[in-house]
Length: 506
Image 1 (cartoon, rainbow, N blue to C red):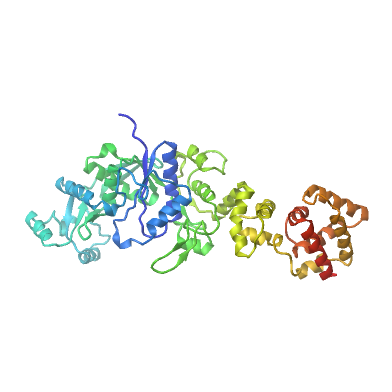
Image 2: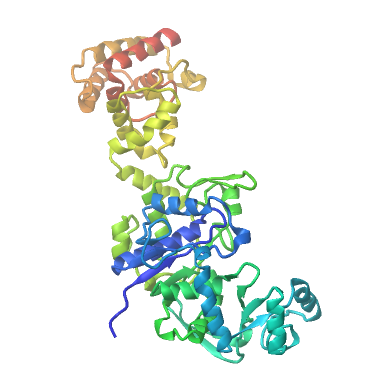
């Protein structure tokens, strides 16, 4: 039999913002599909109508598009296996519910929520399974005629999987190896609810994966306990030969302790856990996003890829194509990965350094406009070239470089006291004359050599001159190398600032 084409799927529920852990799951699916020349499907699992949140589906799609994780088919992409929203596939699932019932692999249960709650009080650690189902109101304990009458009268019911106890179910996981779980610990999961005529996640997921010819299911560790049930469902429906390979990814853990990464951790420690900013339509609460916080999408992708996987070498900076080439499920960790958000900033810093000065200048322009600055692009490019090594985010450029665009109106008192000497005014007046005579003012090395030669000839103290010079141009003790600064400001502005400081500080 020929090798199956690799087909993976990312199947989020539209119940709110997409968590960064879900983004990593989508990324690993994408990398695996691209590496094997396969397809990636976007399926929206919206069978739980009570948890549906307006806007969540569009948010998920926009988030993944921003990150460069693109699908071959699915919701908003089309494809021959649609529809790709489970709520639009109601007509498909019922036949598989009936098949399971006819084969005796499932049964109908009429127990109300109140009756189930009563049973939980009566039996410690109650589980609806082989040991308790004959005490309940279901088609295994009722005559067939009564079951039909109840259904005909409109009584609500669920269909449960009939799990036989005492069987060792083996799940061959591509990350964890062979996992064996005994069926006795499983409950008879609900597969279908008559109340909304929709299957639960378990059945819809299996039916869709089969019909969409999914070859590999790469999902979070939290779904591992459901894997044995899914194996049993494939068998019960006669699809064991087409069962996909499973891979359960490690959890993303809190940066400072144990447990799964949550939004609360992000709020507490000051980092986003969502790819884009999210406004909760019910509460109006706004949660920060990586995009709006100033992260570059390629930095987020690189950072996430290394949380739970390693390339087998010391390489850390990898483009999407390099990640595709190097990725393997075998090198995914079995244990959870601590979410080192400081490392995320480091990645962003590295990617900022790799961007061209022109591209970064384009990203910096909106920040300048927000501060009322209308500067020529040529100058913005020069500023970015000098200052980008000092920032983790483009938005930090303003705080680091505002003095390039706005001359100081006042001078930091502490710096004046420390750096402006008795003879500073006279020396800077001389310096202004030296600078006025420099012809190639934008040639950093030439200007620097000219000024240092003058200082040496005059026998002045280099540090005293340079510290006062910086104070005059910036207003405080910060900024880049002095002659990078003067080259960007230009001769006219440099001299104007010098004379103003001499006049103001005396």
